[in-house]
Image (cartoon, rainbow, N blue to C red; front, side, top):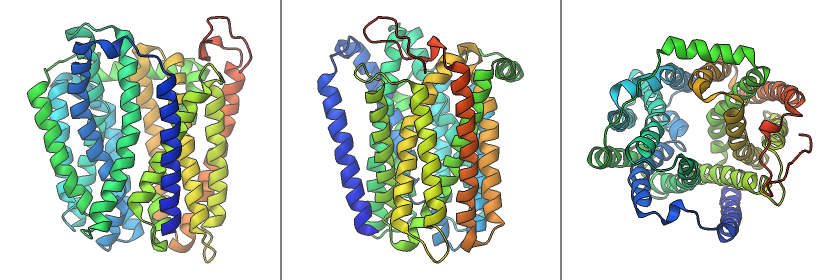
Length: 450
């Protein structure tokens, strides 16, 4: 398992580098890249945002292992994860309103403080303290995915008056480097926890100075901005109306809830499946992130002018890959017949599918959901997503350890079959919908059916 993990990591990393280098050579220089003021503004944003992301990723490989190191049972660990998911959904519902009221810069600094406290709680072996840490982690996650982007968009348009067309370029670059940071964070976590022998708490300690530096840079370099948003109740009511009035939105919500709840359960299960067989957790995590990056690169290639596949095709492919991977896992995790290499390959396929899924889903959401209703609709998407994930973890908590993991993968397989049926339903509804196609690069009408 050790050799397989390192060889897979090297192979995936080489594939990603090859694809990205070929893409960079073929890409013409953009107008935004030659603007010094814009580049400096981007740099000020990236310095803080990337430090925050790096600190977040550092904690991922050894979270389960840390709880195991403190001699908690799998059921107790499942409750800790449920607490984190529950706090994420609760704070996520009000995060946008909180950020707009408090101020985006202050919210980013608050993120640094709360996430640092979350990391400090990992030094304690007290179960209640760890539960509080998971709640703080949920608040921090909600702030990470709302405050930073909101601050950037407001500054970009209102303060600096840069063209709004440049915003997607900034976030596309951030998404790429987010993957790179995740890969590097896995290696760094393995270095401090495994190679240096500092134990599973070490990555959490290393994350604290990164968070402190992110907060300090935001205080020094960023200006404050606010926004007046409509009331939370009106946002949710508008989102619900949109969800129920458009079948495309409803089907997208079903697909997202089913797919991403399975991904949350996978995040919990990969460590207990692979760790007993001597897998280097940091390198395994980096391999996952490299597979996800490879999926994102394949998405860009597939939707390019050479192949011109549609996001709907790639969403269908992503769901099919996950269904196949979960069926693999139901066999590779059979009690007494475990096959860790096969399980590892299945996990890599799930991450590859995630690399295809997230940009496809993002494109379809932008096209289907009106901009004014996106916050409300996404709130309704998140609730069933996290409830399904929590339910799955609670079912695992009440099951026998020897058969519980295999049974959970079987349940996840059934859930993904339902997601596949929802994809088929969406495919039928939008088959002739030109709005959901990537525009033809030649400028000519592109009319093949989805």
